[in-house]
Image (cartoon, rainbow, N blue to C red; front, side):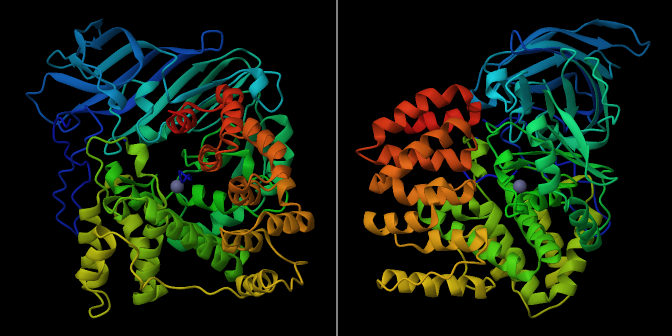
Length: 616
Ligand SMILES: [Zn+2]
């Protein structure tokens, strides 16, 4: 996922297969799941649901194909949250279905409720009949008015980190992988798509069938339903979107196939067949979500100049890091996101050149450095401690950027050739498996540190992974383009402004806004705005960076565009810091509250939860 902005029960034996290279005895405890996959695990799901926009409800059943690891185990335990379980059935060895006894555990906050199902001796299939509720946080139901076209309603899921359990009863831990099939019935005029093989037969009949033959963790099961259209970008890539965005998105992301070819050349063939993009309404709470075969993308990166397409490189890179090898526990999120940020930057470098990749790298480092003082020491380590917490809290720049910098450091120490070979071996060895930090470190030790001794010590690695702060030995990547920005800014601050900005890229503007002193005066901001019209910027990154500077000064020209932005966009990376700045402003706090009152119904439940906290 791209965003910056989650008791313990049974021991879950990590389903990492024993590699011939390593003796992995990974016993990973997923404290965020009630499930008992070490005894009985789901291998395949069949979903059959009706999408009811009038009730904002999914209803139907999910069938679990089971595998028993413990012959004595008689109870299947699943995760649920905010679901109504109507009936559970099981199939005996003769294929006959009968009602099964089930119990729902005590509600445990974000973890929801366990669903324990008593199994007969040889049952290998269960069916759970259920429906979702208004509190099913993994689904956002948008009225027609909340969509871009304003003609038809829209539904989309967001399952990461532990929201899949709020729309499907299942073993909601990234340590379990399932293949799935689905039948989804919708109003006839709408199209349904999933993280699966989306048929290129786009005939709308309200009855859609999907197959995902490759095993994926629950958090990658995804569904969207809306007035969607499709446009191919290449034989292997295409875009699903509402009409308004279709051509714009296909133009913006026209380099996707090139990115795929580059990525396959770097770390092994793209493993999922097709790669399509789904452009969501602006309320989508994240930048992107790496749902396999079909990344979900915010429209806020469609700018007309490809300036923010690193997001596509990021979601695409997850096809290897995250989707192919998956963090077995949310405390190991850096294995997903750090690798992905590293991989993303390699793709950007190959497709758009080093100069751009260097700027994006430096902007990421700046973001990490800004965020560290706000994080506890424990949250500054790559390996997180999430006991009793919401796993959504794992998503800070630490997992993403510090993880990236650790890998960049290893690349620098061992050389690109050796490090690339190591990463390729990692993806090949653990494809379609889960990975925890300790197992990764064992693999690292064996295949890099010990193989090329004297370059990186175990102590170095321990510091990067388990200590707070950012080690100073991460590779610096100076940028000529940024040096030019800094020179011009120095002149401006000295009162001798002579702006030469003709060929500046979006990244340079972002660097300027990043480097502008936080104690700049209102007059200085006004001068800049008159010249460069930041308050009117249609580039969301620039607008938000500017607004974060201008809100504390109650810069009047910003107020109206800010209101429009907050009413239109629900991406939490943008709106949460803006509301935070508004709440902190004695003069604009009330204005912020009024805007939020209007905007809130259009925001995703995850975004609502974050902004609600600010107004407590
Ligand atoms: Zn990501």
